Length: 173
Image 1 (cartoon, rainbow, N blue to C red):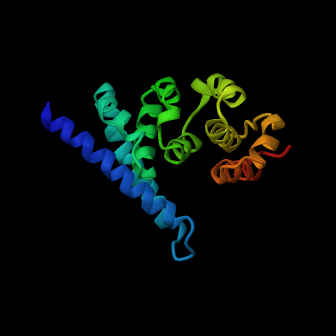
Image 2: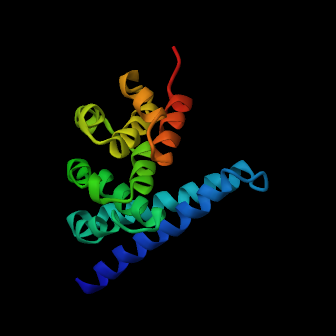
């Protein structure tokens, strides 16, 4: 069993590393499409390796949510979301690295937790609600504009940044 757990940790660490590489690559004119697709394939392979571990991954993934390194938080959040532990992830939003967790939710499926996301958007503190708004907008499920004005005027620059990103990602019909 120890070997399997070591392999799961390795998959989490590789996911973190490759996602950080991908994040840089998509912002760089030096990368070609096939190079991004190769990174995506490698990330997906490690994520599939994590899914094989099932519930064993939870004990490693949950502590990563609070990591200062947003890419480690991303890896933990992605793993939990893909394993169907989205509710557990949302229950810990106040204590996690919001940038990493938000990024994972922006790039993963949210159907199973969409109701809870909408509820949190309406009731959570601005730091969390602005992150939730960004997740919803990334999935073309634009959050109600009612709180955006509050976020645009908030003292926390991260809340304001997320509000502007939410607007930029919102789908227009």
